[in-house]
Image (cartoon, rainbow over all chains, first blue to last red; front, side, top):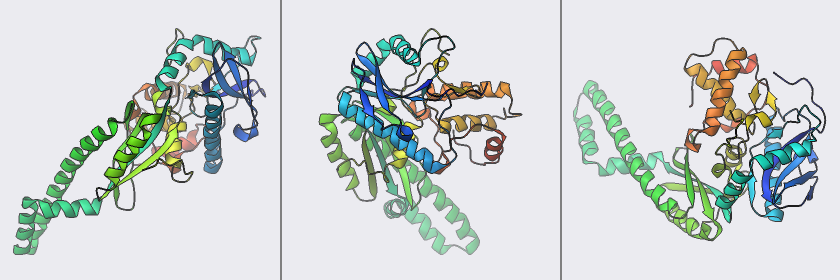
Length: 272
Length: 114
């Protein structure tokens, strides 16, 4: 049921989990200027701020954007100070218990419960960052290239020129189908080719859904890459080569905390 | 080629990650809204869960039973591989309590992205 109550300061907004066994203050760098600090359990610490038990919600996109940017900047600051940081998604708020347990203790109990998994995730992401890689191609250019190269398409075009308007219409439909099939075939080839080239430089890779682009571009692949710091340059060189092929453009962003490589759910005895 | 962290060029990358990904916690530890656990809130996947229901005709009335379905679907989405994570267009990211207005808005939408 929806919570009516929203006791101030009882919840703990968790940005991430870092290495470290001391309670450290990171200053008023949190969402809406909240004081961010760590709550340690053993050698791991949750990065938190005190909040009400009402989650951050707004229909104002700008406000949400600011919150999200702040969430990210806290993780950046924590990474600089504390080293390995496991990122949590936006608006993860630990709920106070009904009993007299302090909110900080709720956080410690959680760290204790998930300690083994948290250490395992830290081992996996140590010395690595996430990068977003998207490769797109210019639709027009590809259609032109296909049209020039395909014997079948050249033949259909000749047929169109020679036919009556009615028949020409049928042939144009056929042409469209052939071009589409050929584009898809080529896109599959490129996908595999680029994927293999990029994968070589990564420690882990996740294929994301492609997005619709405007400006005549088609997104061919959208990847999240977990990359060891010493391999970022070589990945950059590989992407440079793809970017220089002609007709393709590469978007390369990062370093991000490894959001895409820590999302395996934590299953506990009480898990749903 | 150098990776960028330019704030304008990377907003979509940032939203995709902060709103849809990150470590997932056990549902009974975290704040719930209207019976739906906020696993790193992820309203985008949350709304996509509703779209899934619309696609399969599950949507009748927005009652407690369906909230439970939504919670289940969100859970599956969150637990699935990254490739399964549905993404709505960035301009549609919207954080607000689930209510009949949202239901109306999204039930009239033609495109269903799963």
